[in-house]
Length: 85
Image (tube, rainbow, N blue to C red; front, top):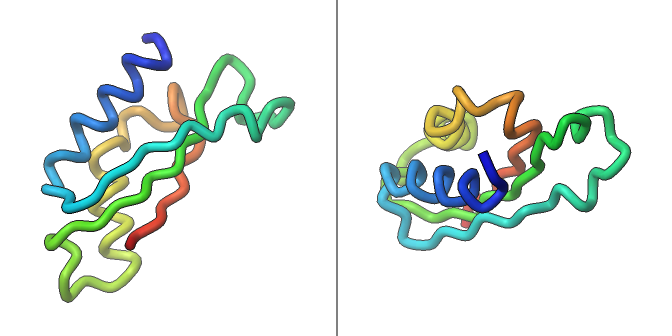
């Protein structure tokens, strides 16, 4: 799967959370040489807001996000940083 296809797939999956704001940032270049980057594994940052996060603690919010991509980890996604706004 190409990097662009992966970005599109993650973006599509995050739509299940009905985000009011969403951005997916490829931070793979910041992790060159890192063991997790071997074999082309990607590092992304998700910046997201969603009404589905109302009344949830941070751990529950992160679980909802990770549920969307759990089958893509650790390959082709090695790391997913989460920023909830």
